[in-house]
Every structure is written in C-alpha cells, then in structure tokens.
Image 1 (cartoon, rainbow over the protein chains, first blue to last red):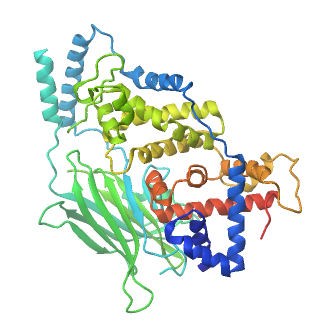
Image 2: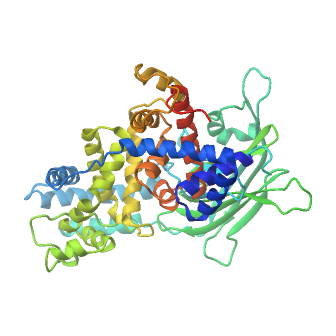
Length: 149
Length: 160
Length: 213
C-alpha cells in the first residue's frame, strides 16, 4: 500500500503539482526504486512529446469551421417568416394543454439524471469514482484497501 | 394573439410547482456477499431496489440491514440533516443544503466508519454532494466489511 | 419554472440591446464572461469570438482521442454547438475554458463509447494491433517508436483513464483543472493517472518497447 502512495507522489511531482515536487525529488534522490519509477515516467513522457503534433484549425480554415457550427445551431431553430403568427397560436395552445396535463396527470416519470457535484474521502490511498450503471442509477464507488479502516 | 398571450400566461402560472417544504428520503443498507447457492437471494424488503442490486457484479446474496425514511427541510429552523447508523461499522449523515423551484434538491451525504482501534474517532470514508430530483436514486458501493460489502441505496422520494 | 430564454442569434442584423457593440475590437478584447453574457443575449459575433479563442484547444483534445482530423473536426463542431445550447446554464464558477473542455472531454468519451472500443484486455489489443515489424530490442527504442506505441496503447485504455492521460500529457492541465473538467476530486485524478500510466507501462513492457525495471 505504501509503495503505491510513493509512486503517486513521484507522478504528481513530475506533473509539477506544487505540493509534491520537493517530496518527489527527495524520494527519487534517495530510493533506487523511486528513481526507476521516475525514469519510466520520464521515458513515457518523452515518447508522448516525440509524436505530439500541434493539431490546429488555422485562420484560413476557421470560416468553414464556424459555418458548420452555425449550421448545427441554426438548423433546428429555423422558422419561416410569415408563418410565425399561426405558429405562435398553435404553440401557445400546445403549451396550455401540456400545462393542464401536468396538473391533472402529475407529469411524466422523472428521468434519472442525478448529478454528482463532488466526491471525496479522508482515507489515505483510497479513491472515489462515480458512474452511471447500466440501469441508469448513479453509483459512487469507494475504492479502499483492506486495512484502510 | 390575445388568446395566445392568455394561454402563455396560464401555462406559466400552471407550470410553477408549489414549492415543497419538506423533502422525504429513503435509505437502504444492504449486506452483499457471495455464498454457495444456485441462484441469487434477496431479502423480501429489498423489492423496491432489487433492480439496482441485480446488476452489481460479484455478489449473489443481499440482506437488508437498514431501511428508513426521513424528512428534511432546507434553509429552515427545522431539521436539515439526519444521521443514521447503517450497521455495526458505517453511519450515514444526510444534509439537505438547498431546494430549487423546479424540485431539484442539493444534498450532502457523508459516510463514516468506526475505527478498528478502540477509542479512535470514526473515519470519513465518503463525502459526496448530489443534485437530485424526486424519484431519483443513487447507490454507494465499496464500503468494505470483511468479506462482505455494505451497499447503500439512497432515494429522493417522489412527491405524494 | 423560470426557463431561460434561448437566444435568437442574429448574425447579419444589428446586435440586440444587451450585446450592442460600439466597435468590433470590443469583441476581441472582451473577457470570456462578458462574451458569454453577450452571446446569451443573442450577439453572434460574441459567440464567434469564443469559438475563435478556444477552437484549437477543443480540436487538439478531440484529435488526441480519435487521431483523425476529419473526425476531430466534427467532434469539435459538436462541442461548440452543445456549448451554445448550454450557455444559459453556464454559471461561471469554473472558467469558460474549463467548462468548454468538460463538454469536449465528455463528447470525446461518448464518441469512444459509440465506437465500442474494447477496453477489457489491453494486452490483447496491443498484440493484435501492433505491427509485427517492431521487435524486442535489448536496449530502449528511440523516443519516436515509443511514442507511436504509446499512441496505440493510449487508444486502448478505458475511457476515463484515457481522458485523464490525454488531459495531463497532451493538454498539460494541472490536477485542479483536470478535476474541474472531469468533475471529480484531485485525488481521483491522481488515481486515474496512476492507473493509466501503470497500464501503459505494462503494455509497453509486454511489447518490448520499454524496459521492465
């Protein structure tokens, strides 16, 4: 368990997280296993940097890109001029009918869309994740070691 | 156009839900284990949440150890939080932080575990903040208990 | 219920009251929060400026997932369309860029899931997909060959680990920024990065492109 913790400290130090930089340096300087882990991370990063390409949408391409965005935004919103008066009447009637339906029938079944705004744990070396299970229920998963408590 | 305007006003007024003063929550704690049996077993009291438990891997035996309904109010002098002892190890605290006009509630769940060392304070295993609507559910997994697991199922109860 | 009004975009006509601009330079120099406010009021140039500012961040992130320009282009456009539709919900507690990257990361994850990338067995994927021309050297391979192997291995990671690795290694986000994008705690960010790196190293050692220390 302790070994996993030190690996994460080294990783966080290499990632430049201020809280971990000095601790990571000390570990790498004094422990061969930590130094080896650090070397592997550095090699991984060097590999990423070697093939990283700066993929961009240049200024010349931007008008075409933006045109596609407008198209996606505006397409469902299109309404024909001259149609608006009759359309608004029908829309208003539909809204009124739906509202009465909510009052009388109590509305549709709620769709499960619980939002997880925060997860955390005080257990060292435990982590918390969350996901939507196959039946749509939000599941918060605590990953703890056997002797964490 | 007058009819349209009046319909819109009527719809807006009708769509305003009466703000709920009290929010009801249901909590289940289930001990999940894997036993030598030909088919999965569920305690009778778990019918309401069986669908959630069935999809969980690893376990085939589910025993209800706790079930309670509580009522909380947000931003009031009355009860905004409640603490429940789920089993011999875990406690759950629920705090209702706020209630929105459309029925959504914001709440905080905290799960603490009794320390194995006598005299030590409990350990905060989980803190989570959720935004839910009546009828929605959430589950908490991973609360270890030896070879079994305490599964917590939490529901913001539908409005009556 | 107070339903925010979806802004009616006007591109050719005079901007609406709230978004009335004295000169186009005002858009270029405006802060993100101001542009969001103007865009919400129906000001098309304001929204276009937001797209102009962040198109490359979104495109780069998308490309790192799908590795094809055409697909990354489509995903990026979808991200901005979604962002426009969600502008009224933008609360401003996280910066606009962070909020946008969150949409982008989710869009990329959805795309990966639709493509049904198998994530159960990373080793199997590597063995079936790696070209046989890469042999097991005695010494470490050059960084470029390692990089290509990494790209394939990253593509085989579970979605949430892939998101974490891409945001850190390709986008250079801090743990706090990643936590806001991924909507989890910094601790969870650390954990996902750790697992991603562990799986990658294991796969790369199996392929013989990295030393087993």
